[in-house]
Length: 326
Image 1 (cartoon, rainbow, N blue to C red):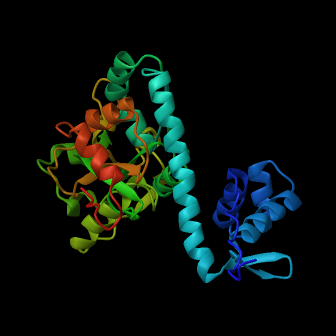
Image 2: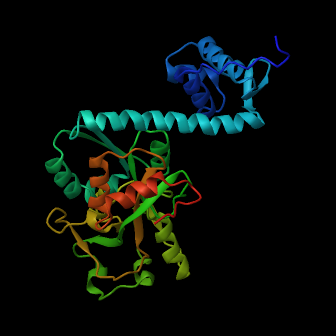
Image 3: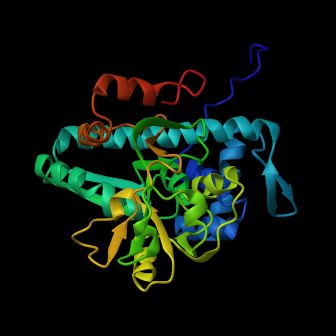
């Protein structure tokens, strides 16, 4: 020995260890749930975490007995690095697949029922014609779940309406705006009124979206601004259900504009109200740092005309403090 301290060997970590740490954090430090997600035993997950901590020479997790209860100070930084490594690995796989199967692969989109049912069909049809080998998955879900599906990697893209948070690890591109329509059965007294006001509409029972669904807060706000308290007798999660009960004569329906069609809804009529409720803007959301295949970029461009591929890639690849939500 020459008196100098022996060099510390470099860690020989593996992705199983990184995934164990990542999933343990995602599932609130619950090793039972983590083991189920990873299809491994709880002891195997604990061992992978311990091995990584030993290789790094620090504790990632705070413990109470054998239970994980939180992250240590260095563990918080390690967690961010682990997440980046796993994202980069996924991007590397997608990049390789891009070259092996230029026109093949899969694309998953998360959106509400109304967007999937009424807004996306034309876009999906054009996309299928351009990329017939791509398997398209449409996740119809509640608005609050869209962000989680994107962040967990279950969805490549998501359609986020106004009112949802915009986490810094998501990049958004404004796509389009839409409004509401007031529908009633044929013969309803409001059809005799030219440009009925909210005050006149509020005299009748209302059937509209549940609290928490896209557009409900805009509807509530419109009535509040006029000092009105509507009698909402039925709440539902989508426009089709709302229209069904309106057709029975139970009340005035407030639905997404594209959900009403005179030909397909022969029992209903649309009131000529103008813009009584503020429009809603929907944005396309992508996880920051994701590798976007050419067909994913094409899908975004179909929803946001005029947006260049280079701009999309630059925005998605930018760090949170440099990214500016559109």
